[in-house]
Each structure stands twice: as structure tokens, then as C-alpha cells.
Amino acid sequence: MRTQMIAARASALFASNLPSGSRPTGSMVDDAIATAVRAFGGTRGCVAVMAAAYGDCPETAAPRMQWARSVVMTVYGSQSPEPERELVAA
Image (cartoon, rainbow, N blue to C red):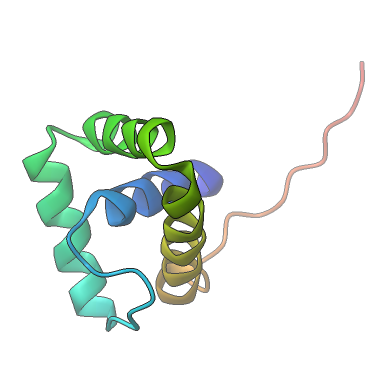
């Protein structure tokens, strides 16, 4: 679940209007993510924006996603991590 939240937040930040390379505050990130989710009809819409960017301009999309994921990990990465589960073969 934690990985899915990170991915959803990163895709929403990717789709937001915050400039790549910026160092936004936590509240700026919260606002940008909420605005993008509303503007694009949910996290699926944000993922669609991200996918279109990778199709149109992969050379700029990849660095933007790296930035978005880094920002999300900085802002949300230390919040009550879900315990790691060990997979056991039956």
C-alpha cells in the first residue's frame, strides 16, 4: 500500500504545475497534488498525463518523474512506514 501511495503522489506531482527542480515545502506539495488530482479527475488522470508526457517527450519526462518521486519521498517518506512483509512460498 505504501508503494502505491508514493506512486500516486509522484504521478500527481508530475502532472502538477510545480516546476521540476524546485524545492517545494510540504504544504506546497500537498496543494499541488490536491490541485492536480482535482484537475485531472483523480490519480488515474494524473497517470494518463504522465504517460502522455513519456510518449511525447521522454527526454524531459524521465527527469521530471525522478524529481517528483524524490520530492514525494522527502515530504512523505518518513511518515509511519508500513511494516515490511515477508513473502513465504507455500
